[in-house]
Image (cartoon, rainbow over all chains, first blue to last red; front, side):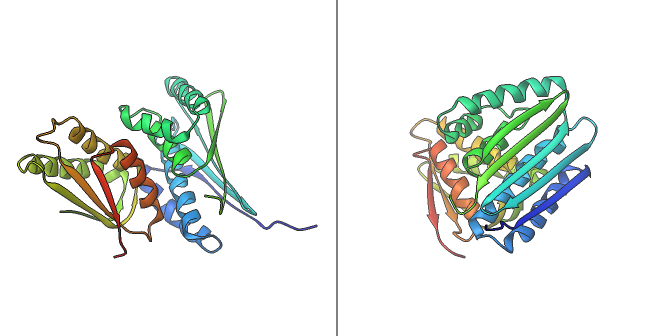
Length: 154
Length: 104
């Protein structure tokens, strides 16, 4: 049986938008030890976009980020509490993304739209540029967004 | 020529928007011109800052043929996010955006 090496990184706290670039740079360094430059770029970009959304729309100032890398799979998970109107908008975005044939079409549509409160452009970027599968889980006012990708496949 | 270096973080959005508006206004005074945007030294751009570029492209697309101009992005192959993001911008504004890739 082959054992798959796993690495995890987790951060929870009261963060501001100004903290997000620092987290992205840390992830680049952390992940850059084991992956090629393009994978590092995808993971860093997705981390930035998802964490920035979580921080911006958190209702209590707290947001969390977790990154799991196992073999060629990477999973980025963010959690935050959100307002009911933001939850409705997120549901709609998730529905649109799930029903699109090509994530790039969703991304281009977000470019055409006025900025959404819940960061539709960032989600589209993660899905299209990052080539990541997005999953939204809502539990009360808690939002969890999970982005999964296969490294080395893009 | 517009030269962007460092990181285009969300906090720089207002400044970036003002700069791009200035380049747009200047380009309108030179019909048929090509604006060169050298982003080879740009290590990252958040989606909020990309939106500023999208807004610029939208304004160019809305111009009539006599005033429309092209934007040539000079990109750095070492920053792979640039290939992905600029290709998306080119898909959004085909006919307006051109991309040249060259190491710095």
